Image (cartoon, rainbow, N blue to C red; front, side, top):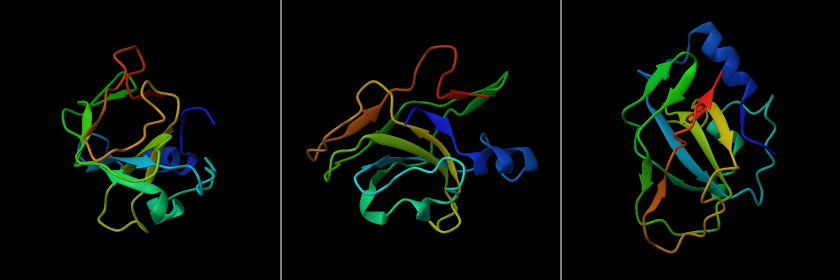
Amino acid sequence: MANALYGKFKQKLLEGSINLTSDTIKAVLVDIAAYSVSINSDEFLSSIPSGDRIATSSALTGKSVTLGVFDADDVTWTSVSGDPSEAVVLIKDTGDPATSPLICYIDTATGLAVTPNGNNITCTWSNGASKIFAL
């Protein structure tokens, strides 16, 4: 699967229930062994089996939206161990996987797949025109 925005995210964005700059947005390292992404029907973090959620970042900082392009500071997951991770999923964190909306699925980025070894893992977002993603 190529990088994509979840369909339910696009709906929530247009309805005004997600604000990328003021909501708590986090990045989740995902092992796709058991998670088969369904980009137009997956809606919440609970769609991804808990065993496939390898690590969750702290809230993204330095978030910006300019001309339909979303960007943020690079993110670091600390002391990560577990299964290889082939994707990063952005979420709006509500504190509950059953109500934390999925935003985007990224599996074609520099450094993916990554095998955690107990050290920190840093995700460096693209500095290209599309940054993290563009509408």
